[in-house]
Image 1 (tube, rainbow, N blue to C red):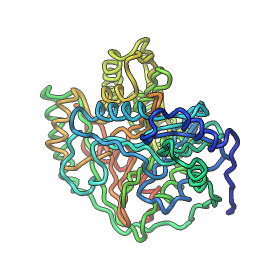
Image 2 (tube, helix red, strand yellow; image 1 turned 135 degrees about the vertical axis):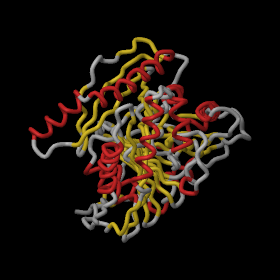
Image 3 (spheres, helix red, strand yellow; image 1 turned 180 degrees about the horizontal axis):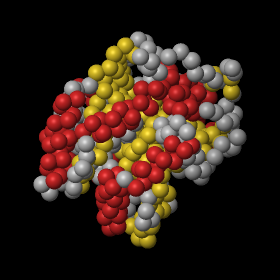
Image 4 (cartoon, rainbow, N blue to C red; image 1 turned 135 degrees about the horizontal axis):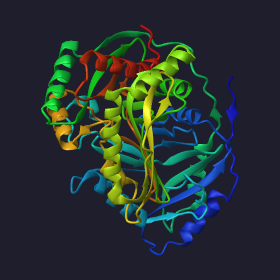
Length: 469
C-alpha cells in the first residue's frame, strides 16, 4: 500500500527560531553555523531515506538495537576527518569542539536525539592496507548532515543545520528549509530477489594455514587470542540498492543495530548485534559479545545448542578475554563499574551468542569518543594482548578490513553518543558486494569449525542482499 504523509510543524516555527538565533549574533560580518528543530508527524526512517534518492552518496541511517531511536542524515553540511596532526579520535574531538564553539543552537532543541549530531565511523586499523575497495571510507569520517530525521519513542523530529548571518533573509532561509518537508511516499519493499550469480573467497587451504599458524603462536605463549576474518565477494544479477537492503534488514534483523553509510558510489551497510559503547549523561553502558552458535529448528534443539554454547570451554574462554579487557579498558575512565560474573545467552534470528552487559559512571573529564578509543578493538574483534594480536592480523590476514569490525555510530552536541561494532556487514557498489566475517581463535580452535562459524555469520547479509543462488 502506498500513500503520502505531509510533514507538519508542531512547535515553534522555524522562522521564530532562526530570528532568535540571528538576534544573538554579535559580529555583523560573520557567518554562523546554526541548528534549529521541529517536530513532525511520525515517519518511517527507511521511507525518509528513500525520499532523498537525489542525495544518493550523501545519506546515512543508524538504528538502535532496541528500536528506541533512529537517525537519518541527508546531505553533508560539514565533514570531519582525521587531519593527521594527532590521533584520529582526538582529531575528531578537537574539530567538533571548535565547531560547537562557533555554533548557535535553538532553545527549542531539548528533545533527546535532536540538534547538531555527527554520524559516521572509523576504520578497524588506523592505517589500512592500500586497497581501492575502501577508498571512500577513510580512517575516520563523521559528518554533520544538512537535515537529520530523529525517531524517538514514536515521535519524529527534523534538525536543520545551516549557516546564517545578520544579513540573512530569514523568510528565504525558512522557505529553503521547508523544501525538505515535501510529501513523502511510503515505499513498499520489493518482493523480488536479486539472483546471486557468483561468489568467491580465498581457498580453504589458505584459511586452514592461517588458523594453524595462529594456534601455534597461541600455544607458544605469544598471544592469548586473535580474531581472524575472511571476506566473500558476491556478484548479483541486478544493481544492489541501499533501500532494498535496508528494507530487508529491518524485517530480518529486528534486534540489531542497523546502519548504512553512503559515500559516493559505495555503501557500507550492516546489522550488528554488538554494541561498543553508549554514553548518555555520563552513564556508560556496553556489552561483551563473544562465543557463537546457530539457532535450532525446534525449541528443544535451540535450548540444547544454547546449553552447549554456555558450557563450551573454548567459547567461555574466548568470552572471558573480552570481559576482562572491557573491565581493564574502562576502569581508568569510570567509577562504579558493574559487570556480572557469568554471561547469558543472547539470541538473534539465525545465531546466538554469549553476552555480558556492562554498566558504569563515566568520569566528568571524558566523553564517548574517549571510551571508543580505549575500547577499540576489543578482544572480540582484535584479540589479546591487543598489540600482539593486531600485529598478527596486519601481517597475516591478507585483507583490508576497512570499516568492518570498527566503530560506527553517532555523537551529539552534549558529547553523548553510541557506537556499534560494524560486523555482519558488507561494502556494496552497483552489482557487487564484499562481505566480511570473523571468529575468535584460541588454543583449541579447529580451522574447519571456525570456517563454518564464518559461513553462519555471512548468511544474514547474503539474505539481506536478496541473493538466491
